[in-house]
Image 1 (cartoon, helix red, strand yellow):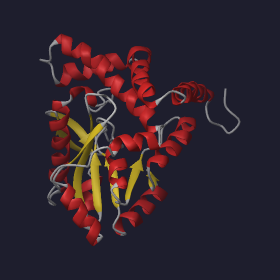
Image 2: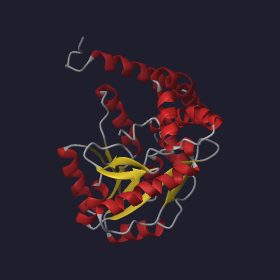
Image 3: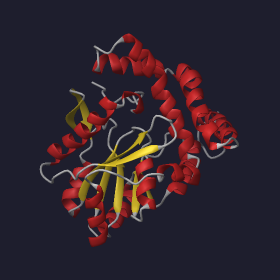
Length: 290
């Protein structure tokens, strides 16, 4: 059965269920909606969608010596963080205010200030960790011109309001594809800062390592940096113990060189933080497909 514009009916039903969930949660105070969405994802959705099994499989593959009680904890902690991230992205200014309660810190902050003052392009690399849009929100609030490249969702109805939601955090946003890439390059060449999420399996990526296992990784951030003389700066929004606020960490720029060496440095940067905060990385992803 198809909807009138040719898009499949099943995804439409899924989207309506998500709209009801998100719409209902947005009626609640921020301090209630964020942990509640985490609870719904971790206790209900994760079980139905098979996320717990995928988390367990990834952990057994990558960290086989992890104690069983820690695996069980992460089966709940990971989707809890995913749920919190989802509703935060729909919370607009309330989320931005949480991201700006403390100044960004780390050795890369001065480099960003200098690049902004001189008009040098910057590529901000991050992963599906903590809340991957927290650093974008914080750096926009600091006065930086930060754009983001995003991959359109496979569910077109969900994609429509998801893009609208993340646009409220900041613009411009560029969809993957020919038109989006052209606009993105123009923005980058004008001295903008471009945010890229780098930790998903890419079919035509380079075979690098993540947690010591082969992981196909896009070289696009390094290649763009070399082509347009852009800084490459890892940045992360690390969720604090209260589950609502963030530490915005800006690491030192990655030196220019061979694209694979640069990209491996990005993988290593994310891995170091994930090891410190295992529950904040999206272990539901199929990062290792071989």
